[in-house]
Amino acid sequence: MIPYASAAEAEAALGRAMSWWESAWFRYSASTPDYCLYCHNVVLLMVVYTLAPLPLALLELCCCAKLTSPYKLQPRVRLSAAEFLRCYRKTARVLLLTVGALQLVSYPAVRAVGIRTGLPLPSVGEAAAQLLVYFLVEDYLNYWLHRLLHTGWCYDAIHRVHHEYAAPIGYAAPHAHWAEVLLLGLPAFAGPALVPCHITTFCLWFVLRHLEAVDTHSGFAFPFNPTALIPFYGGAEYHDYHHYVGRHSQSNFASVFTFCDYIYGTDKGYRYHKANLEAAASKQMKEMAPLYDDHDTTAAFNGWKQD
Image (cartoon, rainbow, N blue to C red):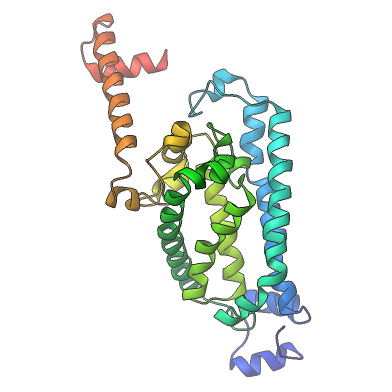
């Protein structure tokens, strides 16, 4: 709760006029307890989980396979509306019972690490730098926990639930055993614990992390996806291979970026798989080339792709 009775008092304490965003935050949070502001995370999580995967779910359910197959990573796997709903209901229940319950008891830890709710709000540069640190910290810690979850007992007792979807969908991003949801929440909290931030940045971090998880589990690879511009970002194709291999996968453990897999050699299976696909495509191009008057292989391949 902001400790100022009026906007004028807040501006006097700041020594300057509030920005538009700070004025809006003051009006919204001035009479709201910090605990309630922290619990906004549960509401935001459920809204993002409900809405973010919906467009691609509708695309898969409503569009004919001929239109979506070129972009679907495992085009032979198509789920029914009932299966989408089953995934949503089951996962939403686990999220509410785990993340929701955790919110009720974890506020003292949030206060202890220095997450603040008052004024001033962070600048765009400050928030961006903190978010980058959070992504890097979470990615590194998540990598090792994910590798642990692929060991014998951990996989059989816990992680196999997440791998029920060998062809992942957005709604299956947080689909997991309740113990895994709690365990992988530790790397997500580690960044803010190391580099404390404002509660608005804290909430934005969890929203962005969930959007990233939905993207990597979407099952689609579109050429116009803006995440392709992010350096070292794995994306849907990268993580889809991990689900495709399943239980015995020893590749692509990283949750966001690819450098941990590269450094520790756990992307070899994926690179071998990609090399085989590229070799097969190259061979097919050469076999198709004689069918065209123009003997330029690239032109022949482009013509074949359009047919």
